[in-house]
Length: 95
Image (tube, rainbow, N blue to C red; front, side, top):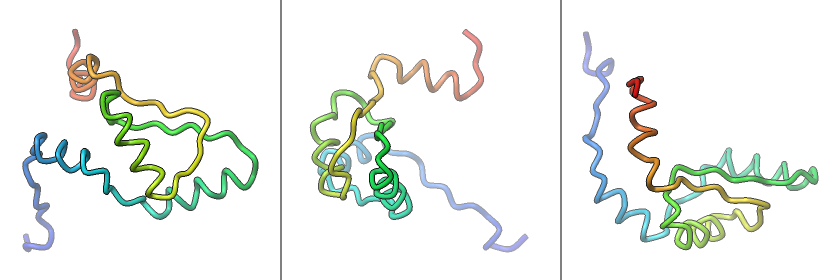
């Protein structure tokens, strides 16, 4: 096994991530922005879905606009109370 075949994983630091989100400087993923622009130009309605929590709606809206996502019909955010339930679902844990 060579070093280039080993995945290097960083432990997820929720506080560090949340602080980064609060700065509102997340750049657009260029292919996503291109798809968004193409969909708008074709006249489709746009619904944006994010894993960010509802309590971060304001900073998320500002960040989307600054990143080039200027208009949409609906923005769906995660309800904070369901975060742990979603994590259990993803882990395949039966309740």
